[in-house]
Image (cartoon, rainbow, N blue to C red; front, side, top):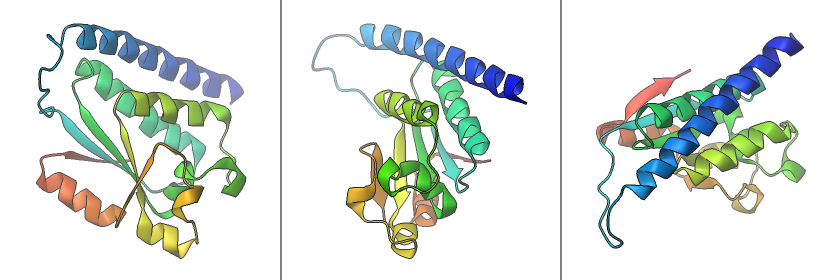
Length: 160
């Protein structure tokens, strides 16, 4: 089982590294400073509503794959609600204690523009305040409402 976990990590890192390289090329080819960038036509919203580490890694890997496939020209939102909210809670307030590798992937994807939305309704239910969220988290009124709004804006809904 440890071997499968390490293979999954290596595969995820290879995909993320490829996305990083492609992203650098995309940034280099954007043109003159001051050009306005239009929103991407490639848009996806992921539902992340479980606290299981393997489930979370699968979603993070998928987001990195989407970025790579579209040469970093993708607007990606990961909506965290229910038990999935714990991905966005600082270590000192988090009873799940995700391994450092997972949190590094969140940071890296965030640097590539992936947005991590935190459901305020879930936060109220489990008594998490905004100060307890990691810097990459963006509070939204409701994860479910956010999924609806983003789909109305043309985001492809991806459930895991």
